[in-house]
Image (cartoon, rainbow, N blue to C red; front, top):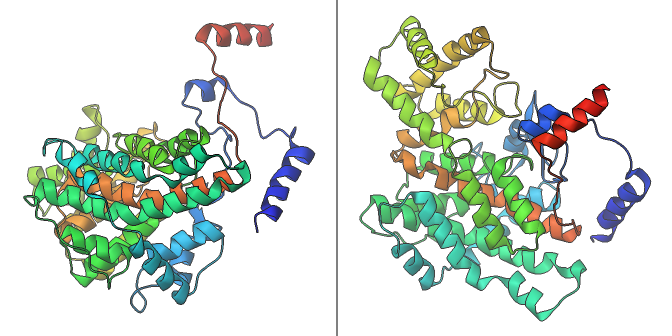
Length: 426
């Protein structure tokens, strides 16, 4: 029943369309539109102090109420997909049914693998992954339906089919890329008895029950981070041109592949390993302080610290830390991450240039994956991409259901800004 939501949107527009949401400053225009309120994104909202809420629920709340595969275990990503799509917490039966639905859609056509195989094995995993997504686009239901002609009010229906197909097939494509690059191309068949995240882990080659739990947690917490981040915004922007979900998501992945966004999780692990190599595993807190200062004074940053919006420790970091304390407290890299958590924020605060000295999601994920044998940091952004499809896909369905328009902000030149500022000052 979309009518009440469409009516709510119309009412907002007709009754409150002229209400101002704040002033746009020159700083915002020159600073990458940072802090401008300029998008509708229903599936999640990011609070600078408390972090992300998925349909109003924090990560700890999601861990409590969303169904898990094992008793007191991590939430199943299918449960979060249900929550993002419907706004309601699903039952275990509903989640199990969604698992089966995704499994029934997960067959990948042979030409997708051929498209990936056309690339050199040395191509970055994200390049190979995005190529696979572009090859999947051949099957787009939205494109077929649009070409035949259909009313705008129905656009969400083939979009829904595309998004569920895309989400269901990504683990197959992503695991193929992993096995091709790092395991001599020896693919592993899906296990139809497993849930979405566990099956993905299995196809990668990791069957430790703790790793399955980690993959469930990882995919759940990386799904969505409101609409303004590069990958989510790109998916929304490209989708607003009525490009189909495959084209929109492939564009989003290309944004995610940047070192200031999803590639950061690769950079963090490489940096932590380099600290360990240079200093050894028994580094004291004082030695670590010295190392961090040296890094900063040489003009480099400490990867995994700071965030574009957050002003506290990222709750996605906190839940990964809890996972590590539960399952791998003795891991030397985790112990180093813990020491960095003690050492880095005070140093960044003292430095005075950083608005947020606290760790973000990327500061922790690599160490967990590394512990269970997924040591290839170059691949980590692909995992992020599989997860992010759930948030971007859910919102894209709502973009179409609500009939959101083409995105088209106004741009200006430096001369325009200078002239405008002169007029204001006069």
